[in-house]
Image 1 (cartoon, rainbow, N blue to C red):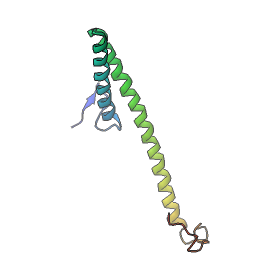
Image 2 (tube, helix red, strand yellow):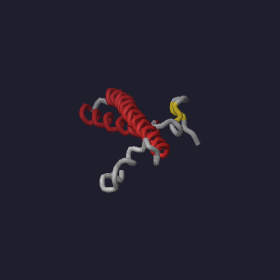
Image 3 (cartoon, rainbow, N blue to C red):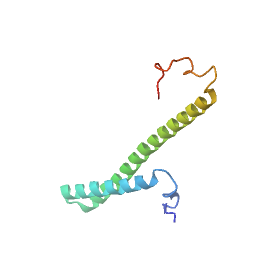
Image 4 (cartoon, rainbow, N blue to C red):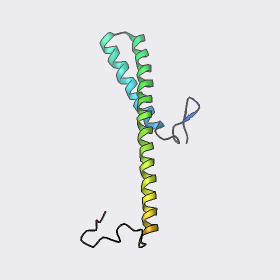
Length: 107
């Protein structure tokens, strides 16, 4: 079953959304409680908790999406490399064809 945060963010189907909300809530708890223990001001601590939630959630969101984009780029490059290897294997364009058995790398 799908859960929509604020009516538009589908937490189940959007990559990084679930982790961002979880880390945001943890950051909210830590920052709000820490501020309350330091100052004993309830209203300001709630404001700090909301700000901590937003900052932590957005920070982890951008971090996770950046890593996801890098991973997709690496997967695309690897897929293209495997395709080229299959395409050129055994032809005169094969870079490993000219090497002898002792010079050949097994990577």
